[in-house]
Length: 457
Image (tube, rainbow, N blue to C red):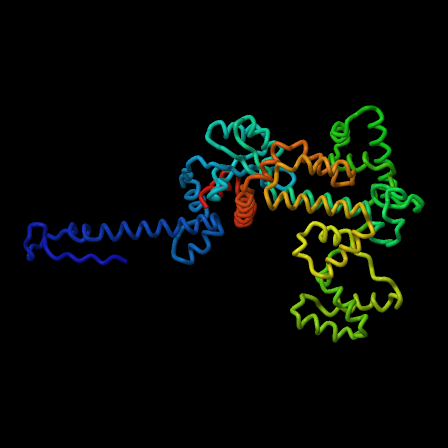
């Protein structure tokens, strides 16, 4: 509330009956402008943090009588931030609607600012945007359509592959290799060192009974269909387009000699008790069989487990024969042993990995390749990548060979990724912030509002 008091007339006489508000208004003009600026600044913070109805609710409680559409109009009226020409541009996609609509976000890798949001992830719009904004020297995290768009719009730009996704792809390749040699994990006999002689790519013995059921019949029919089309001379990509399947699905059937090899075994679901099972098995072998006592030990160590988890696992230990050999490690666990840095492994993990590698020469060779690739990632030895690819190709290990051939096709992008210090940390952070903004807007925002919220935040 503003209280106005008049002291004298405009003529200078204090007793004049004619009074004016000129002097009080001039005094209050500056404070009123400052108050309006602070009010607009506060509303702008609420708009950018929440927008729409989510921003209108707290604003009304604070005494700002603004509706949701007012907030949206104010957000859309904000000017786009101005930026210079970054030296390094990060490019990645994010989902507008999962599996259906994708958009592209570009960031300045050096100062982590979002510089552009494009409503598609095709090669054309990014290429046109790069042409309108010349001056980029490097682009990190590119691939596929983005690589093509960078070649069109900025042919002199150095493209840098993302090291995080390179490591992720290596982990999947190691898991595929481990699944192909899972007999080495189950059977410690020397004859299990060459599982390909008795099984296929999936490690399934040839004399296993054929699976039955509707799922098995679908697998058999799909395998026969893919191999029939291959025999007619069609490419794998053409088969995927003709059948409407994913390319990886067609590759899985095409690479399998028998249809039984396409059936993957069900993996046990992960549990919060998994990290503590070795401790329970060791205490059970020492003679401590009380579920209550074992559960209290884990609770004392702040383990996030409940009594029923411990009771179920102890019941399986009681049902096993006393002289039963220890359970073999799972493929996922062995993959973690091979993929992680040796300093990140416990003494028990090192002993388990040493035992596995001593029993299986193929996994021992794969572990050597993984260590070499890890040195390239850590020490930026991109110049040695062709030698590594040749060594992996010569070993003919399932999973790793395919990964090496993928790197060979993108050698001009992967080599800088293993050489320069730029990465995709900033672009991954931008995608995470976009996910937060999408949750705040509850899926009700169109692309223009979403773009504005991404740019101005």
